[in-house]
Image (tube, rainbow, N blue to C red; front, side, top):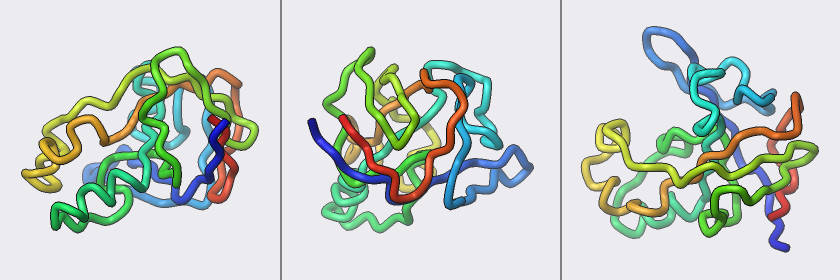
Length: 144
């Protein structure tokens, strides 16, 4: 079993500017992340988890981006990208089931045109909440 911790949390507000905020905690349930613009929109893409490793890969290619730029809800200090759909991970009291690898999108190109190529398989993974309503906080332990 691998363990790590939550480094940062993010939500995208459903406003005209698509404002990204970084709260100390997020509330999640089977429909995703409360107060996120994607809440209850696509069960298979409810929560995006990204590793610090993604930012390190970008940095090695001279692409300096701020945490949260990859669209993640949860930034972690371990690499969960080898998990496959159906596998689970525990973050604090929350159980998440991996649903799919995060595909590259136009939004990533708008951050930096090289990112889709650089992070081809290393942008993040999507998961859905299977433990019901719970709170995820910065510093929570992750168990894979």
